[in-house]
Each structure stands twice: as structure tokens, then as C-alpha cells.
Length: 289
Image (cartoon, rainbow, N blue to C red; front, side):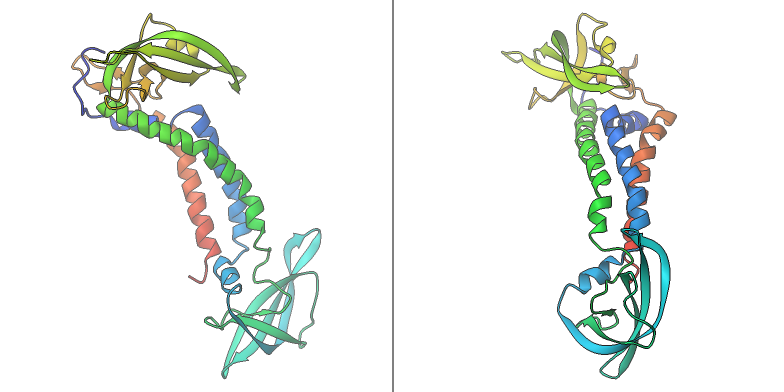
């Protein structure tokens, strides 16, 4: 490690990607997000979000007629959701729009009161119905899993950003293990430990510590001192080389090495799937935009 190229140093693409998106907890978070977004996509496709929002603004009411109804394949509390086609006029212009109820409310030909946004009269619904197949609050329920996933993934991503930055600009030091404590967490039935290392930055008059959390403790206990990188401005921001995803190493020329194509692909699958499903969900919920 003493021969590591001076900062700022280039970080291999695949190593950088594995640092950004690697780590067990972050991957679990992205997996949970992707899993939850599957349900968000399914239910979101049955919710017209712009129309739901529009019908919560300033509304006007006219008389209209139910032209048709049909049963959907959806149910709420084991009751069939029914779609209605309503016809109404606003200032001489005739509009047709759909609305939904849980269970039957009206028959074709029946007169109903229709409410619509003053600024968007084409969005109408019979008073007492809703704009989408499922109530808008359904999004809150299906959003629980993606929210939990992001709470797990984003801290890991922020940690990855710091690690990537230290690979590029960090200064080299060696740390000595001073404590090893088990946590209440586990990965693959292996206990996660907190290992505290003490090191002295170059030119510093006092020692600093950095903590690594891992269930693969053997990688941080195989040397008398472990190589680490620290921020010269804030030495407490440090990362142990052997605790980084991608197996970062120093080549004979002092350049960083490590990471692999398939390793980078592996850590990008779940974040990419999460982004794709989120994008599709947003698109299907906004058909009129």
C-alpha cells in the first residue's frame, strides 16, 4: 500500500461501481425495493394519479347520464369493482369519462350528478364514485415495501459514495484492531461484527479510529495491521481496503486494481430493476400527462 499512486488517482470503472452499489445490506434494500415496486406497478396501473389529484381541487357539478357499466376483474374487500361510462355537458361541449365504485350503484340511462375540475372539464366522475379502479390510498399500502427497501439501500449508497471518493483521494495509513464486538444483525446466519481500528494519519499528533461492520471478519484479521484510506481533512472518515466490495488492490505500478465486469453487473441488477419498475409505475399512473 505504500506504493499507491498519489491522489487524485483513477478508480477502475468496475471497482467504482462495485463500491457504489455493493454491500449486503444495500443489495437487500434494492431487492426489497424492486419486490415492492412490482406490486406498485400492478396497482399503479389501475390508478390515474393526475386525475385523482385534479379531482381534489376546485370542482363544478352538472347533471349527466350513465351510458354503460361493466364489471372489472378487480375487487375491494371481496366486492366487485364496477366501471361506469358517464356522459355530461359543460358549456355546450359533451364529455365521456369513466369512474368506479365498489359494488353496483347505477344502471345505464340513470341520471347522476357529475363533478369535474373547473380547469379540466374532461375529467369527470359521478358524485360518490372515484376516478380510478382502486382508491388512491392503495398507493400508501403498496409503497411500504419500496420505502423500507430505500431506507436500507440509500445509507449503503451514501457509504459507497464515500468509499469511492476515498479510493480516488484518500491517503494511506495502517490500522490496528483494538476491539471486536458482535451486533444483533446477521447475514446468511453469520453474526455481523463491529471491528474498531486505530490509526495515526500522516503528520497528526493524535490517533483516530474507524469502525467496520462485517460478517466476514477473517478478511480484517489476517494481518497485524490493515491497510486503510482516510480523508486528510476529516481523518475520522476512513475505509478499510479489505472491507470494500470489488477486492481493491494496488498493482506493481501503484495503480488501483480490482473489480470485474460480472461483479459490476451483479451489483447493478437490483438497483437497475428498481429504477425501471419505478419509472414504469410513474408512467402508467400518468396516462393523461
